[in-house]
Length: 152
Image (cartoon, rainbow, N blue to C red):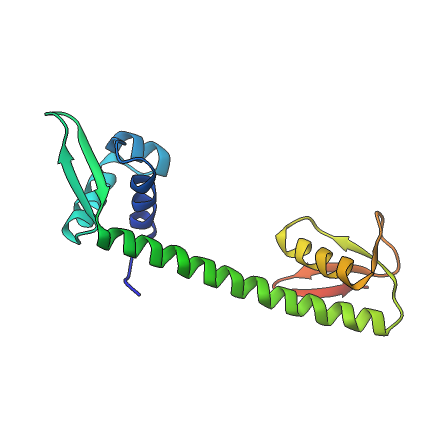
């Protein structure tokens, strides 16, 4: 995969959405200095990922080239693949924990936490028929690092 820095990717994303943005707009949206935006855009042009057109003497239009669109798409697909791997890993761990709980005869659990990782566990509990409690019961589940665990 082509190496691309986060700011370069962010610029490609912004340009893909609106080719009429000024460097000042890009600076505000990305939270980086205008000088840095200018430097990154020049780098993207040199790499052949962005082309610039003069609309008048003070306005520029930025467009992604086919190579720029390919790099942008490649990075987005890579991110999606990585995200699905992380999701799959948490899902597998949640299924193993829920299977273990059901084998131990546990029918009701309390989930301690509110984030996407707990949401994966919540979905898995629903699918397995475990009841979710609104208050801590005998079985409290939480996220510890990148693992699910039963809180004692």
